[in-house]
Length: 257
Image 1 (tube, one colour):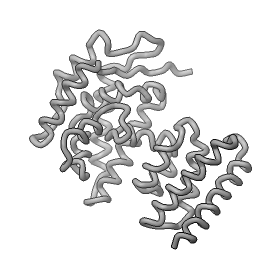
Image 2 (cartoon, rainbow, N blue to C red):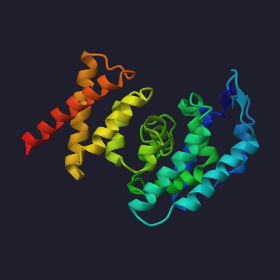
Image 3 (spheres, rainbow, N blue to C red):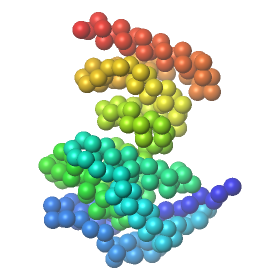
Image 4 (tube, helix red, strand yellow):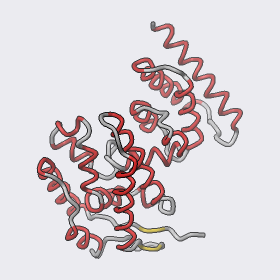
């Protein structure tokens, strides 16, 4: 059995300082800072006093290089195409890196390290692709604060964790689909998540109708799950529940036309 790999944390006060610097310097360019990297990695509270193997400096630098090289090889095009390629690529690398550290990657302070210390230039690169580049400090702070719903990298890792490679890498879900499902789903229920994703993909709705479908579907799912338990180990029962909710959702959309 593999030992849990421990990743560095950034102390709250230090994370706040570096985050403010990130926001202030965003327009002039963000670069990887060796001094910040060394200072945080060698700090007395960088790692928790728990069991596990601490990741080394060389491994962290390898992870950074893997992110850079994967993006160079897999991101092309422009507009939404390059944004989607970036998200899939960086999410995959981080997901693979965290396979032996799922608990660690659930820690917001680990994401502060990954974003503000290890990959700040890549975080800035992704943020510059979207509308966030025109929104000021509050949005910027949220995008680089570990644990935040709109975190620039954590949300991408979470997609791979919840839905798996086939759905994510296939580009089968839209940003709206991810938003409405991940916000409402419990991350430790991957079978349910994938069943929901398959229902959304199979609905064949597009655009605003697809957004209506996914939101309506999730509201009905939450209502049902509050009344009866949905066991994930009974695939036939799970499929029956999903199919019933799908039918109710379609009927609701058709009535509203």
